[in-house]
Structure formats: C-alpha cells, structure tokens
Amino acid sequence: MAVYFDNSATTQVDADVLDAMLPYFTEKYGNASSIHSFGSEAFTAIVKSRKQVADLLNASPKEVIFTSGGTESDNIAIQGTAFYYRNEKNRIITSVIEHPAVLNTCHFLERCGFDVVYIPVDEAGFVSEESLKDAVNNNTSLVTIMAASNEIGTIQPIESFAEIAKDAGALFHTDAVQAVGKIPMDFTNSSVDMISMSGHKIHGPKGVGALLLKEGVKIKPLMYGGDHEWGMRPSTENVPGIVGLGKSSEICMRQMDSDIQKMTDIRDFIIDTTLDSVDGVYLNGPRENRLCNNANFRFDYIDGESLILYLDMEGIAASTGSACSTGSTEPSHVLRSLGLTPVQCRGSLRLSLSRFNVMSEAEYFASVLPSVVDKVRAMSPLGDNKNAIRS
Image 1 (cartoon, one colour):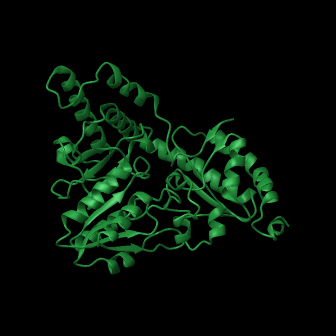
Image 2 (tube, one colour):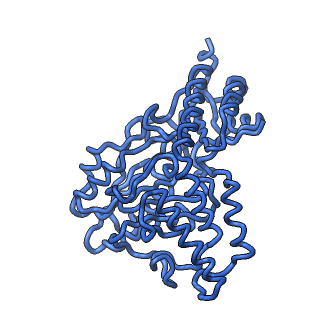
Image 3 (cartoon, rainbow, N blue to C red):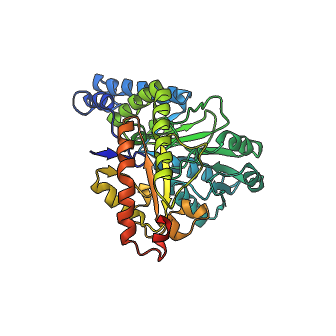
C-alpha cells in the first residue's frame, strides 16, 4: 500500500487542475501582453484566474499579485515594506517559528541595518498578544507572523495581531501558505494587509503563488521591468501556472468545508491511535487550534530520519519537518523554540494530509507504526534506558 502523508511539503495536482492547464502549454500559448488573439486568450485566462484566487480569500481581483510561489510572495511583502518605509520606520517584527522564507529574509534585513525583533512562542507554538504589544513601537513598519505553522500546525490569532499592528501604525503580513484552503480567510473584512499563498500546497502546480496586497497599501517592488502585475512583479506571466492556481483555488473554495472535516477526522484518528499504541510518544504543538491536516509527534530514543526511512519501506511517505530545511544538520528551529532538546527534536515525525487521503490509509499507518518504532529503537544509540519505556 502506498500512502502519501507529506502534503505540507507538496500536494498532488488535482486532475481538473491539470486539464485546465494543458491547453495553455500547446494551443493557447500566447504572451498575455500581446494584443493579437493568442495574447488575448492568455490575458483572459489570467483575469479569470485572478478572480478565482480573489474569491477563495474574499478579496478584490485588483489585490492579487501573481508570483513564483510563497517564498517570492514573502520576500515582496517583507522587503517591499521594509525598504519603502526605511527612512521613516526601521523595525520589523516576526516570530521565532516562521518559515525560512520569512526568517532568512529578516536575517538579510538585519544585515542591511534594520531592527528585527523575533518574538518567542510558548510550548505549543503560540505567539502571545502581550509579547507582540511589547514589541511594537512607533518605529515599526511591519509585523509578519504566519497564519499556521508548517511543522506543528499551530494556528495563530492573526486577526488580533493585525489589529495590534494597525493600532501601532504598522502593516501586517501573514505567510498563509499552509493555512489557505484549511482555514477560511476573509481578506476584505480583515485588518491583514498582505497574505502570501502557494499553488502547490492546494493541489495546484509548483512554481506559482500569489501575494494579496490590500488596495491602497504601498510597498516597494523588488524587481524592475515591465508593468506586469500592477508593476509589482515584472516578467512575462506563467500563464499555465496561473491558470492552475486559479482552478485549484476554485476547487478549494467549493470543497473547503468537506475537505476540512475529512482531514480533521483522519488527523484525530492518527493522533489518538499513535498516542494510545506507542509508548514514549508525545504530540508536538497544540491539540486544539491546530491545522486540520497536521499531526507532529516526537518519540523517545528514536532518530526521526531512520523512522522516515523505515516507514518508507512500508510504503508510507512522511517527514521530520519542513522540506525546505532538509539537508540541514541542525535540529528544527521550530521544535527548539518550543523548549525541546536537540535529541527530542531529532526524534520527531510530521504527518500531513490532503483531500485525497482516506481513513484506510490512516488505519494502515496505525497498524505498522508500533513495529516500525520497535525496529528503530532496537538500533538507536540515543539512550541507554530506551528499553525502560516498554516495561
């Protein structure tokens, strides 16, 4: 049995999304800036896709800027704000558990002389309103805090954070790459100024995303060229990718309620059976206010990468954390921020679901996990007392 439980890394492209994209590789291949019929076809497709994305997040199509993905969207929002307001306000506020696309951008801004504040989180990964209020001041241009953690699934109260930023005269951006499609979002009736999203997390193609920029908000472009995307993102548009993002957004909006319920049921089964059937296992992140598709555990006396490899032998694809950190020798910065030791961090397992997962896959995972854990523990050098947990 083949089971894919790594949907926070990337998702399967929906068949209807692929069907929508294919003509724009072959028959309708015009440049959307051209005035002939081929160009008009491409331009019309982008207009339609812009509305589909806007509808998913209850935004105006004029507020949708197409990008190459979540990382570029984050960079445009964060750097764009920082450099636009540089001579007026110099402080950027973020959290310690952000995605590398945000953290490394903030590290770059520090090297450019900006004052960057990294707010800590509690043991479940939540940023407190009090800590944010303590951090903002009249010199703050931007607060950027993710809507939901890609590793531990913690859902942050971003509307409250956006209000705090607004009261301080700062803009608020959220990396919602993992949240879009799993949490209803209403851009029009929110105090959030910018939202980053990515196509390949919602059954769309890789290499395309969007930044929602509230009408009237001013930021500085990162690149200069043509007038594409309101002058905020020059370059010939990736029409097939944009069509795919639009179609995946349309499907996402139509199926969101049922998808959330289905993934929540499977997630809860995985969490409950894992905690009941395996000794020395703990849930990373909160039990409530957690993404419907995320389960993250840590195991005593286990190396997470070994666990991943043994699960893969059983046909189950999972991860130890963010795919963007794969290859790093350092323990997860997210788990370390929860107060876990490096050894505890290395014993973690992340399972992430999509609308295409079914309960029978979770039942299969539950049936093989105990024996896989026993095998990995039998080889583990991580603790002399590892057998004590079985007694």
